Image (tube, rainbow over all chains, first blue to last red; front, side):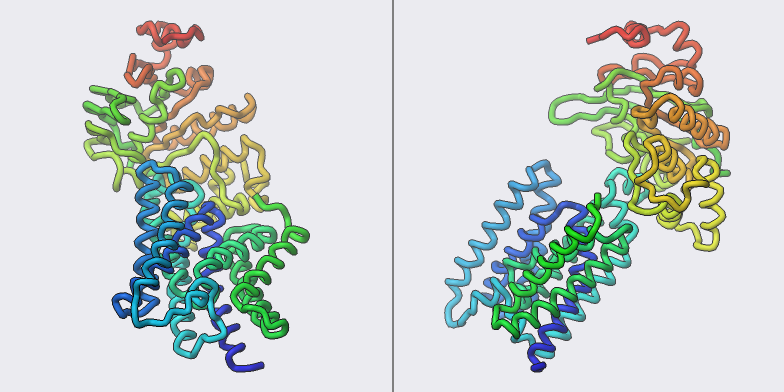
Length: 261
Length: 242
């Protein structure tokens, strides 16, 4: 197998360490659209990074975090969640696309940011992806009990002395980090799929929250390797191929798994 | 129960809770000093759940203070309290794992947990279900597990929001027994119920709310024999008061 394919598979495997447990929380909290809004904001982050000549990772991280916090704040003040996220997701994406067109003197592969370019991952990217994914996984493991209680019921969490707002912030931070890391792999339009699809598939087989998170990691890895392999065989775009592989695993879970609850 | 003892009296002063311009709760003064359970009664929309959430510090009042033996509600005081909700909230785990989880959240050492889980499950009459997935329990068993899990933190004060509202009489009796044992163990029980039989059997005193105000607070036998307020009389006679 070519080196670039191995690097691509390793990038997808590394990312799954973060998207598995985080995706489980996205599914439990019905935050799928929140993930999309944060991911779409990444394009605005790219524009900001290019305009200020800073790292794309930092630009996307800052903007994704900003949009995540804005969404949390607005919905906490009683604004409708889906409307707020709809406004933020599409506005940030559109604003990002418009802003990129103003950045002069820089050639931008917009398709790469929208759909990912996992086959161009280099050794430096791999270190960043694995490092970032391990940080997110460590954050989620550290906060696991509190996050789980706050996800189950915010009143129950508050009753146990856990601040549900702080746990929401932890998830928003983790989401922004994952979006920044995933941009090169699956792109802004498909990040949400990597969060949701493996976790949704895992739900069909898991009996406990922990096994669901672990299975989501495993399914994410399987989708990454399967997607890269299929992409090499059929000469298809790698990022979308990974998502298609994840979708196939989800279909299997519908047939072979239990219904979940 | 906690060897610290119940933090009595509970004193409420000039408590209000408003949403927009609407006053949902207005309690100038209330003192709960009875060690035996306090039942909060009143029709739907009277502000019972709101009062319970305020007492436990889950929400902040618009104005006023709540003190437990002189200490403000919430914060460190709130961490020595526990609450059971109308609908049991359980993890997708076994019955024993649900209790273990509660002990873990309250930083009980791993070595201590096994014995505590057995004792708590026995207290709730759930020992035979220890290895069973919690969500396959009956409604009454689920609520018993929710109470047992709340007791895992060894609370000074146990708040219960209509814990028997959707249960049949025998399941309600089992819950009642569990609550009575918690009260005998030294926890101050403050509970909302519409089950007047249960209130009569279990309550030390009654706080009767109507339209966000305390209409009367009195010892339970007196309340049921001679309710003073027109609203309480109508409530006990199952008449609609607007």
